[in-house]
Amino acid sequence: MPNSEQEIQARIANCRCRMVLVLRIARRYLASPRGYRQAEMLALASIGLSDPEIALALKTSPETIGTHWQRVLLRLKARTRTEAIAILLEHELGRRLDKTNEN
Image (cartoon, rainbow, N blue to C red; front, side, top):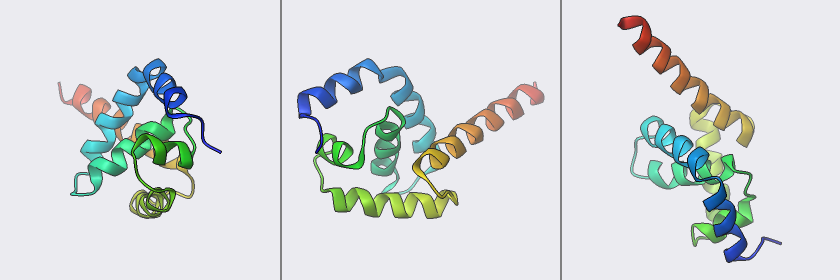
């Protein structure tokens, strides 16, 4: 059973920096019409929200979140939520290292 909407909003507020970082990376990596919604989902998952909590926060159904996960995992060639987030972070780290080496 998901926490209340107020509890979820408090968790989001407490982890805003991490969430914003993952959201920015995911939006860049998942650039597509559905990419923004999937990026929001990844950002919420990165702070530990469960699928029902993510659905509540995004005001959608858990089934929709499940569909988003299937697409994101396939697109990132990941097996788990954690691996998907790690792939995004590794991609961003590699991108930043490449920029540093160019200068």
